[in-house]
Image 1 (cartoon, helix red, strand yellow):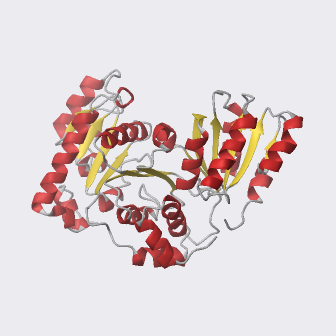
Image 2 (cartoon, rainbow over the protein chains, first blue to last red):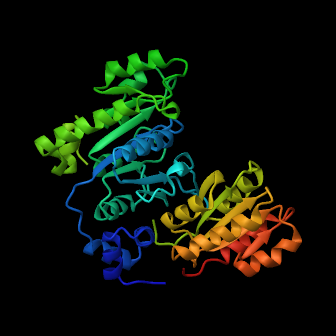
Image 3 (cartoon, rainbow over the protein chains, first blue to last red):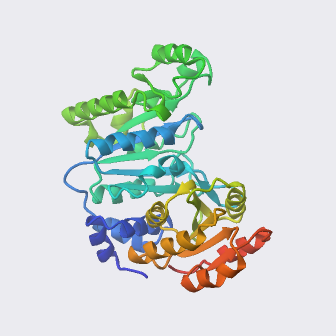
Length: 263
Length: 135
């Protein structure tokens, strides 16, 4: 079943989930029809909030997103999620398991979750993630959450496509010097220390607070700290709307975040 | 990266009240090693969740493991939902403890293949790789 680009673009605008998913595959597969659909999509008038969720492996990014979906659904928002996991550099295969934590939302018609494999792309995202984001924007999702692969310190593509970036860390992953290092924590708007009930959490909080502007503590699997996180995200969005920085170029955003060099 | 053939995308998971996931994880791992993108949904999925996930993930096929004895209701339910939602082109295969006498009926209903205990892993990999057709 192959449809032409105009039909697919029309169906995406009507939030036909099958078409949205199919267009994302076409884009991932670098199919020219996918490019043609993108050219015909118009972002919905109400601008989506795009939030990047990044952080070290195993810190609870997917569980945090699961709770964010619940919270935003309670507020009546339509939520899209792009969850990126790594492809095997040897076989090209992948086990995309982020959405296991989010499956309670699988059959909610106001939630769309898509797993993406990196397919060799470096930087923490798949090559097609930015374009998949445009598809969700055209389908008028209110909140779009993008989960990067579990990153080290230098996979920062997310900064270029998400106006608000949340870095998730966990207690016990290093001392204050780790918190001082450049990279992930430096470019994040909000640092979330998840697993806030684990040993060493108080110490890690103090270290992070000494180095980062905005640090929140969560226990995602118990839904603790999620409302505070949502409030802070909303405040960031409000400030960005006020000073127009959401429309700024990536380099401007990086400079605003205090990064030393653009792109 | 050079343009390569698009990888197969396969949903692998378990439906219903059934916690036996050792086998299904081995299958997921073997398919990963064969270059397949596996969307792994984990345990205790409802047919509704499986079908919604398959559509959002635009998979070529769904592979479900069932050791609970509920295959005669769960697998046809998944097929029904797929067709109802215009996704009848997504193939369904299964594995687990499924008595021989149930197999013909399930296949007639539209389940493409059922893999019983002691199936060589390569048979499953070969079956999945043969699914690489336009859907």
